[in-house]
Image 1 (cartoon, rainbow, N blue to C red):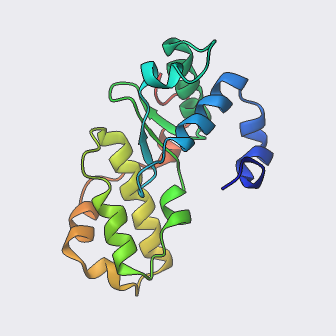
Image 2: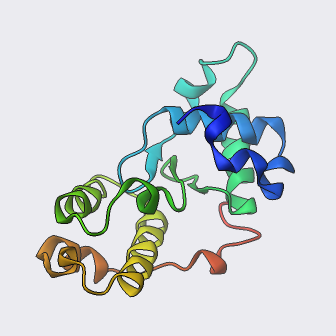
Length: 159
């Protein structure tokens, strides 16, 4: 998706963020998130992508995204979740795509971010209760994990 095509740029919450947080958002998005919407944010590596950016800038930008609820950051694991990414890139009626999304959670260390993915999957199941993917044991296993409602994180997550 081209920068100009991304609907986030017209979001008032996103527009109110500092340029540092906006830069971290797009730089992390460019790092190719897993199908579940989680990307590893290596502050040292990402800071090297800009001549004037420090590791602290990356971490603080990610924390600002988290506080605003634009993306969710786990500072202990340096992982970032783009909410809604899974829904945007995965066709719930295609079991293979859903299983690929579920498999992409493997290797994610953050319990908070996995819980947010579980919450998103549960919402998808409510919207599409007859999808075949819900019958797959891998999907059922992930959905049995504790969900984290993003509403419980707004205004201070990742501090």
